[in-house]
Length: 375
Image 1 (cartoon, one colour):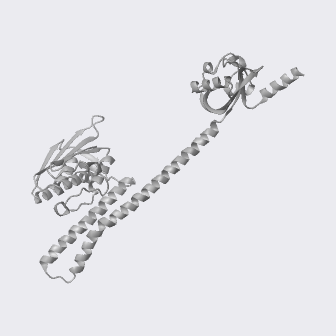
Image 2: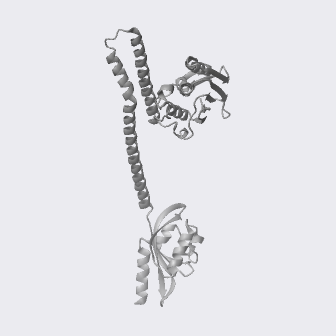
């Protein structure tokens, strides 16, 4: 009867779908079932009897695996512990259970079983990744909504005064006949309108860059013409305020490029307009340098430096200068009212051209911006 029981037990083990194994107290294999041999791609038990898992080379975390088996040999039971094994050259997720084998109340080894859960783990990881992506999308959506709400609130505030001024002046001057008063009031209307136009354009630029909707209108042009255009805009504005405007050019005057000249000019003009606004006397220097890149010679490395003798920027404000609508507290009657978007646009245009921008400034000592990018 005992012999028949052993045969029945052996038959059950060999026909089991789970991989079943048993080891001695040295953690060396004593026997395995057919499912185990098939799963690990072994021809017979002779390939692993008397060996441990380290010798078989399929462990990815030896320390944890050995530690578990030492605990089992001390009398503990390990149930459905996750592990990653290298099976037939491929990493597979398994769940493994182990329990001690007793002989007359003395531990004589351990027995265990394992099941492959690679597909289940893959699905779990996909579901977890999907959950994280959904949470991230939700956070971004909430963040964007807060940002949009803040932007709308700020726009209302920014637009209120110039719109009120235009409305009030135009209403009061409906029947005005004094040419001097009309001329003065029209200048005020023009200034308010110009502010609103600048605000709207810079806001459009920022949103276009953020949403990847900004299209660079690339065309072939002479680099010299780009710099000439910048000087043509800035020189009369600087001289009108009594400032010296010095331009230094260090590049091949015959160099031609394929780029968006308007955006390149916008970077320099925004910086130079800022310098004019915050400089009462002295000079503004615009240094331009360009050289072929060392990699292929087909691109031009461009360097702009804008230096002024203006009022400078407070040290505490420098980290905020590129933030939207960020403006240092200055006397608006003396320095005028800006949009707080000019430097934001500059920074994002520079980044769009794979460049960077740096600033050095000290209050009452002037400001220097350095920009570099490739065309």
